[in-house]
Amino acid sequence: MNDDWLYEISPKRKLIDLNFKEIWRYKDLLILFVKRDITTVYKQTILGPLWFFIQPLFTSVIYTLVFNNIASVSTGAVPSFLFNLTGITAWNYFNQCFTSTSNTFNQNAALFGKVYFPRVIVPLSKVIAGLVKFGIQLLILIAFYFYFILKGTSISPNSNIVLFPVYVLLMALMGLGFGMIISAMTTKYRDLTVLIGFATSLLVYISAVPYPLSQVKEKMPDIAWVVQLNPLTQIIEGFRYMIFDEGIFNLTSFIYTIIVSVFIFLIGLIVFNRTEKNFIDTV
Image 1 (spheres, rainbow, N blue to C red):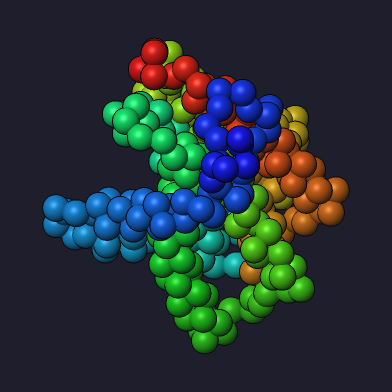
Image 2 (cartoon, helix red, strand yellow; image 1 turned 135 degrees about the vertical axis):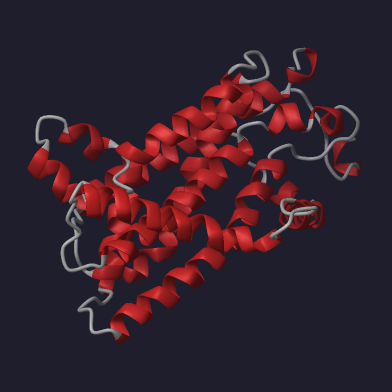
């Protein structure tokens, strides 16, 4: 009898369940959510999409003034503003994936309670919509990159540039994984939403965003391992390395980052799927 149905909705699911065929079947809904996320974020705002440009530029200026001019953090041959802009561009995509997916169940409880569709489509749409913002900020980075090259700065990408899509995927997997875990937990513990902003503001400083990893090893060798074990550090440091050909890249650390990112995503998917079954009773 089951062969007569297009698909069957059942409470019994696999531990790791990511049905690509079903997601593809709902691709129109996924596209609709992506469009919604892009168009509504800056609706009824004064500057609108200009915030895509303002946030990374102003943050880079502040980091340059505080860390490079006042605290005298060296960025080597790379101009400090460009160094900071690169780190912020990479960090912003992870942060977008994490924060936008971390409240999925609470924000969409009314929708989830009325109609069936693969719930994972909602956090996926946030990650895909974040690529638009990331792409715009990447264009800003490229513009300043060529500006400094024309000024005579000796920077150039290396062969690791082919890993660019891998780094983007790792940021998406890690942000999505953490987001789904927190989203599941906030169905019972609402105060975790308050901690998200606080946690991300601290995480940026132990992810080597406003400074190179080499400076931590040189000035604070006793706690450098904390920063080095952070997989986000390896992503941001590798992101800079492939663009500037300056910094630290290690194949072992790269493989470690891949393993951790995939592991976090799988854990997030398991927790998300388990919470999906009964979250409507606790939200």
